[in-house]
Amino acid sequence: MVFSRHPVSAALFMIVSLVGVASLFVLLDAFFLAILQVLVYAGAVMVLFLFIIMLLDVGPGGAKASRLKFLSGVAGLISVGLLVILLLDLSLGAMEPSDCSADGCEDCSETSAFAWPEIREETAANGNSLVFSPSVKAFGFGLLAKYMLPLQVAGFLLLAAMVGVIILSRKSTGEEGG
Image 1 (tube, one colour):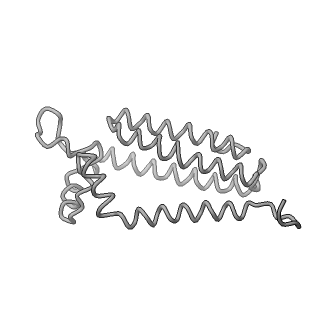
Image 2 (cartoon, helix red, strand yellow):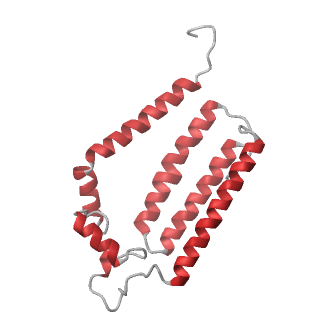
Image 3 (cartoon, rainbow, N blue to C red):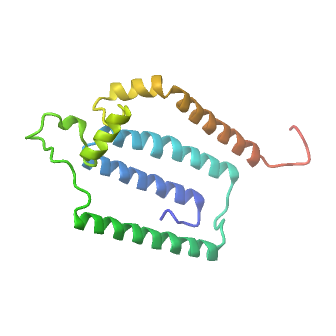
């Protein structure tokens, strides 16, 4: 339903799908990621999208139907191809998760469902301590100390984009003032 003709309905359905992704994080025991998913994506980003859509007053059927059908067909073929590649890799055993289980490993807090030993060793060799850090404190310290400039740049870009949309969406009338 994200492909709805009405942009506001599509954005609301996108919020529902993002909450579904958060529920998948809960099933993977990644509660912090689930909360971040709901707060950041389903909350802040989608509210910003809804605000922009309503501010622009976009009507239903903004894109041409023939182009949309073509692009959705191409996206479907790419998705099916990637799914086939993933299933072939899984069936041939190319991707093997670590042997760490809750019973037989002392260092299980540093692994996740998708953390294979090769990736862990490579990131440890590169000195990136945030990738497999088990604590939220280390993540927050790294984000606000080591990665403060990229965080500020991303925030400034979001602010500039929002101001640009507000300026572009103003209805241009012949009269200035009230």
